[in-house]
Image 1 (tube, one colour):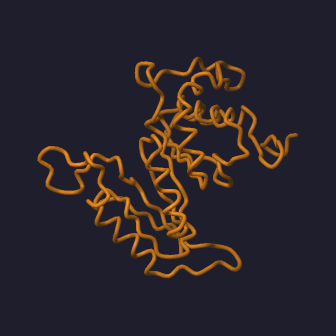
Image 2: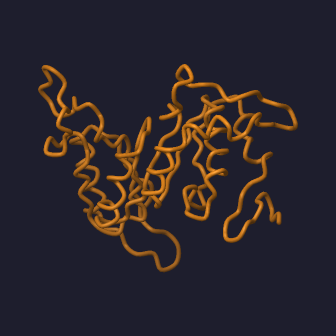
Length: 229
């Protein structure tokens, strides 16, 4: 069934191809937040549909795509096993009934991931969720990784930031490195977002929780974005 711009199957809504392929018609580069009102890696989302979305992202290198999920374990498994499926996801993709051609090989045809224009992130509203989800994110092939601490419901220690040497991989230090910010990047988070809950009955955000995240990011030289109070 079709409702608005989405095709509804069970509990989830899937956009038709004319919506899915919109980024291919945008010439100027944009930052695109994928599925802002849902979770693109939700367990109800078929792998084949995720493949098609990643195929569009691969064909639109002029844009930067942000994929945020609470399903960190599924994202790790999906991304680690998806490279062979992406090239066959939509052959060819179509925009306004015009073929846009086969998907390009991004590095000589050997592998697809990580896509340079795709940032992968997880939500972590408190320490428990950070402990559960961030290790999965770090184990997922990605060009850049980010954490969204929104709504922030308590203090969080981001002990995975590469600036903290106790979390370094065994081969972290480059020859001659003298500062922990010269780690090889395997354990690094590239961006941290924080923000409060909104709407009626919103739970309060203590200023010290946000300041604590900010201070950790400053020490690690990782960009920090405070989104809203």
